[in-house]
Length: 212
Image (cartoon, rainbow, N blue to C red; front, side, top):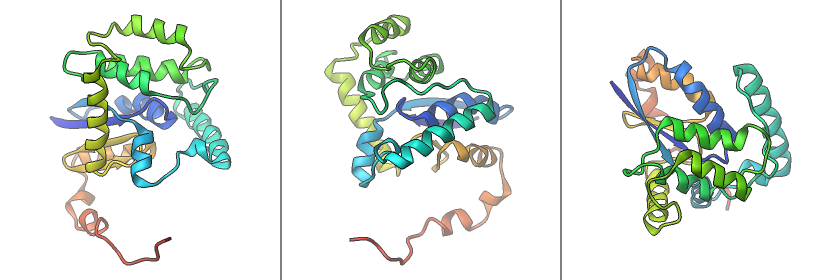
């Protein structure tokens, strides 16, 4: 059985689409998935990047693209009333949903659909209260242990080379993005390309022009 780590932040529509698509992509592949909340903004800051929604033409393209992708894969998707938004309450709620701070698939689905289905404000206090009641956390989402766990998850992800969401880790390999799901399946089902030298070779540093 393969062990898979799915890194996500509910602020990302691609994380939502990948989460919804994952069971179909990995159908017939024996695996167990751990869903790991991380703060995308923290990772972007570490790597010196801006999020797609922070660059106006890129935001426009991204929203059009994800709506087309959702239609193609048959997933309901509505742009939330406010985006980007502060995802911290949702990330902390995910961690607080279980004593071991490992949210299950039902919890992650509730969080992602809270944001990406219906087109409402994901941070509306009444909606957040209703979501909290639905998830019924066993730990205090606002407590110091949860806040620390989210920081540690994000820092550990950065140390593992994660630079965006969704990212999927399996057997010391990292796969980024919705469009990497077929590649992930190929790796998890013994694809012959992964037996060759290309994976290691193409991961080596190279000479190149760098911006100052």
